[in-house]
Length: 232
Ligand code: ADP
Ligand code: MG
Image 1 (cartoon, helix red, strand yellow):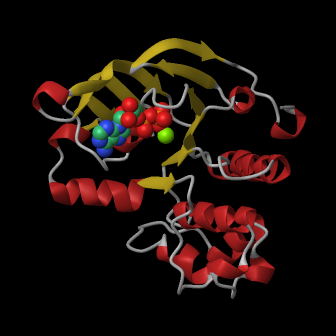
Image 2 (image 1 turned 135 degrees about the horizontal axis):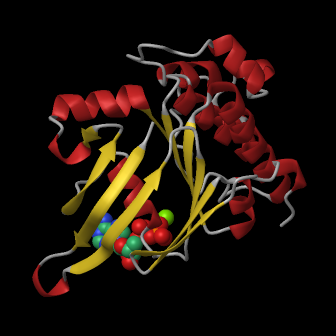
């Protein structure tokens, strides 16, 4: 999944109170890359992710996903893009409370044309022994692993992660990042991780810095570090 963001602007509010939150974003992400988007709180990271994820409308500019322009997709095409192409992981896990771990993960494969083998995924996620538990019976790390499983069950070409370790302690965070690293190796998924933790950037091929609605720096890293070797 190749991503091309061209001159994207986003405004919030009306009239006098209208503010520009994204001020003409230009960036690309190559297929198969791990890209980290860094920036202080309020810089517009989640807004950009939501635009790429088709959750919010672009006000100016365009976002191309492979050859497709998100801004001109019909609602049916946008729905397909969100259900089939895209995996989305949030800081707060948004699990369905009355579904078990296995059922939450299976729900992610709904309407997918090429779902991942759920049993295999449960093993990779370290959730096989917890598959029949409900979200309120899980630790934070297990809940996030379930949310990752749900995003991956459809075998997405593009995985968007908004502060995926934001609510987790150091060791659990490393666990989750190692999992993303392994899934990237196994499935070749293009991954975009939003974070304000610069240590996480060491695992990325491409690091973009967002400040006050603008990309102020892009760094390429031909040899990303293994997550286990990163210290923070
Ligand atoms: P980040 O994820 O980097 O912390 P956000 O993208 O969440 O930043 O927010 C960027 C700016 O846009 C902030 O000033 C925030 O207050 C504002 N903002 C975000 N969402 C909305 C919204 N739905 N309505 C109005 N302002 C918003
Ligand atoms: Mg945010």
